[in-house]
Image: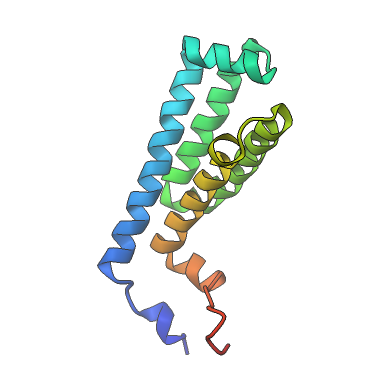
Length: 140
C-alpha cells in the first residue's frame, strides 16, 4: 500500500511555484552560458579579475549550458541539479578565494542552488518523498 501523500496531487500553487523557481534558474543559467560562449566583454573582464584564463570562458559556458539543459529536462532534472550544485560550489569557492563581498558575491551560488533545489522539490513528487521536510515541532 502506498503512502497517502504519494497518491495525492500537489496543490496547484506548489507546482507553479516550483516551475517558476526552476524557470528563473534556467533563465539565469542560459544567460550566463551564452554570455560566456559569446565571450562578451564584461565576462572577459570578470574572468581576468578572478584569475581565470580567458580561453576557459567558452568551455565554462558550454558546461553551464549542459547543466541548464539537464536541469530543464524533467527526466534528467535531478542529475542536472546535482551537477549544477558542483558547479555552484566551484563558483562559491572562487569568490571566497578572491575575497569578494560575502552576501552579494560569495553566497550568490548558494542562493541559486537553493532556488534550483527548492523549485525541483516543489515540482517533483518523488523528490519530496525521498527528502521530506519535517518541521522541528512535528513528530516523526
